[in-house]
Image 1 (spheres, rainbow, N blue to C red):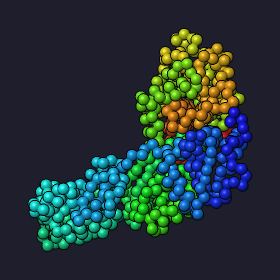
Image 2: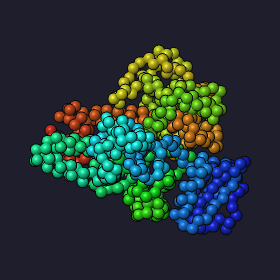
Image 3: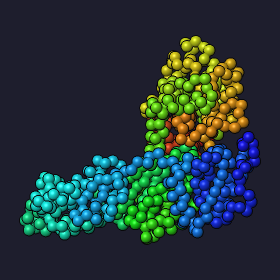
Amino acid sequence: MARSAPTVAYKPKPGEIPTNPGVYRFRDADGRVLYVGKAKNLRARLSNYFAPLHTLHERTRRMVITAASVEWTVVASDVDSLQLEYMWIKEFDPPFNVRYRDDKSYPFMAITMADEAPRVIVTRNRRIRGAKYFGPYPKVWAVHDTIDLMIKVFPIRTCSDSSYKKAMTSGRPCFPGQIGRCGGPCSMKVTIEEHRAIVDDFVAFMAGGDQRFKKELTARMREASAAMDYEAAAVYRDRLQAIDAVLNKSALVLAADTDADLFGIAEDELAAAVQHFVIRGGRVRGVRATTIEKELDITGGDLVDQVLQRTYGNAEGPEIPRQVLVPELPDDAADLEEWLRERRGKSVTIQVAQRGRKAELMKTASLNAQQALMLHKTRRTSDYVARTQALTDLQEALDLAEAPLRIECFDVSHLGGTNVVASMVVFEDGLPRKDQYRSFKVEETTDDTDSLYQVLTRRLAYLDRPEENEPEAVEPTADGEVVTERRRTRFAYRPQLLVVDGGKPQVEAAARALRDAGHEEIALCGIAKRLEEVWLPGEEYPVILPRTSESLYLLQRLRDEAHRFAITHQRRRRRRDISSVLAEVPGLGEARIKALLRHFGSVSALKNATPDEIAELPGVGPKLAAAIHSHLSDR
């Protein structure tokens, strides 16, 4: 079989692959392009794919085995390889390259500068000849809202081309002009030349020149007020308020001359979420969110590389900013800068936001990306069609007799071998059943596999017991507290599938527990976090589920939820344990114990604190601080 071979049959002969920069393509037996990549040195890069198969990342191995041939194209420079790689990814949509799930077009504000009387419109079409674009905006209503405010300050044309032609031919104002919604020449209030000047001001303001207009309007308002022309002063006042309303929609976050795009990225082994902040004139003018599916394991720098190529592949001129801020520099950052410079016509820098307000904004974008990734995963497992597909795929992939309608997942958590706890989370029909979660305390153990064996043995014992002998149930409430109750009937229900957090050793320990308990009819698998491999008992190789499959997302969600619940329980026990220890200190009451833990933030910080640092807390003098320090040091 191909797995046991040291490498693949189509491996090029030594010396065949050039050392030039270029782009390579892996194809399957039917000629379909599976993966496109670029390299500064084709021979060095491709040799990584043709190493012994057992040394390759599992998903890279699957791509190499699936492929039947590899081909490459030499280019003159690294910048050319960037462009060619982008073009081929767009053309062939290779399944092993990153996939953009959110490929919808976003709404933009556009000003049709090539028209005799330019108008402002909302559009998703990025190819209007001569148009100036601003955005993208997350929702259509957000663009309309901004336009409504802007035309109060800069009354430009909003009517359709047919209305404009009819009004200019007949000499009667267009209907939007009659109701004050259009300020073009068709409203019969300004000439074409005067309207063009207002349009230029509109574009300049949106491009970041807001301070100049605020100063001018403020000066005119004061002049009108001094001349007792209160009606004109009120008009200028209203325009100033409209400007403030527009500016308040995107708070000032950077220096007024900042022209940048900032990318916040959150990722796990299967997917990534990107938050693209468009910053012009120091303000966030638009936000675009994208979710990416990852098939092969790639570094953070490579992911940034792919995101930038995707974002600017069709962009040119002013659409590309002076500065691109990213969480991590790709290896070919200099080549990307050159590629962007050629498209923009001016210099472009790619930087990591490390300090100051740029770093703070990067934290905001990254936080939004983390929330978007979590929401993306939650929605996938909450959608009925996706859940049904996930359970069906699991049944096929694990060769189960029926779809696993009840799945229990176990995770072990500890602190350097101490305070060992385990969690059991339950999913029914692909959804979490938090009222049936359980937690276990492991008193004595040798390692994680032994802990897992103990916990599963205890859990499986209840399958054969009457309901009245059930253990305490542990339920996480909305505020994170843990509540215990008796007599949860579902604990005696038999799961169709047990999932453990871990690889082959953990699965074998769980299989031993099932065997010893006499419940080998229950299916078992493990999911290893680093590579997202699915392990089955007694198998030499893991099952590799497609990274875009709903079944893998369900297993990942189960594993993550079990880990979260284990950590929550362990933290609660640690707080309770340290509170009990501190309560033994004479003169230290419950209020001061809470104040100590709140002040130092963690148990380890309190244990490492000096008596002088402890004494800084109000109400804790030097004598009590020394007693606390001595008591914790003895533990």
